[in-house]
Length: 362
Ligand SMILES: Nc1ncnc2c1ncn2[C@@H]1O[C@H](COP(=O)(O)OP(=O)(O)OP(=O)(O)O)[C@@H](O)[C@H]1O
Image (cartoon, rainbow, N blue to C red; front, side, top):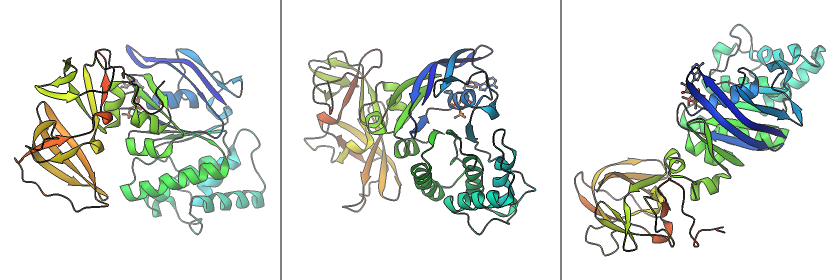
């Protein structure tokens, strides 16, 4: 179990991390999501020992590791730039960690071969042992980098945007592989990503960082369905966020009167998920707001429609499992409707107003 308590880090005047506290269970897969500059890499670097915190503590299984140098912490880190040795083969790159680790270096060649082969098999690189790392693809380099870290049997594996440089296809495959590897090895993963789909799809729990603070720590479904603050909803990039105020029991957004969840009197922000909204003809009785079609984007399993609403761009996502995509013309007037039960309301501090009809609401 790893326990972080009040971790704070300044770079000059910049507060990169402000009082982050968190307990990570053994075997847990934790994803860290946040906008650029929110402190994700700083948090990993503090845990890895590549930077020192200004205050706060890091304990691993009860032991304070904050004063230990990086190689004595029993952690592995996989960086975005792979950091492989260019003059070595795939095999030698992975073997390196075993031969040279601080505690229990492995010197017996047969043992090294056995462990490296098993690890290359796990990351799907059997047969690539003798390739130079200049002769393999980006995705394969990423796997070598992962194998080199995992072969040392770290207690916690820190992944800093490990899939960032991969194309969407490879990224999806690696996502599955990482989870399989975690299930096989039982190692704790902390995985930094700027990609909300990755964070939602992979983690047992997610931390959302914003401005150096952990603004939400919860299972992905909960973060996605009930973002605790309007900032979390923004970071998820899955919600239309509308500004306004409550007037006679409805949310007045630029003159459109929108239905509110129960007990939302103080609402100042209103959010509706892209996939909870539907496009309808502009005069349809269910239309809640009117908008002008801008463009659409095919996403494989669905289409995202972009519209200009009363106060900014509105996105509507439609899955194509049941129907062909609708074709609209640029400038066409449309209506947008949604169920009142799908709307979220946030108060003047940006905090989610928990209403009685929410799943799991107290
Ligand atoms: N070595 C440094 N010197 C000065 N400021 C730094 C340094 N490293 C990070 N920062 C600042 O600290 C804040 C957090 O940076 P950090 O790299 O942790 O963010 P991040 O969430 O990982 O961002 P990204 O997704 O862009 O990698 C930023 O404001 C950044 O400019």
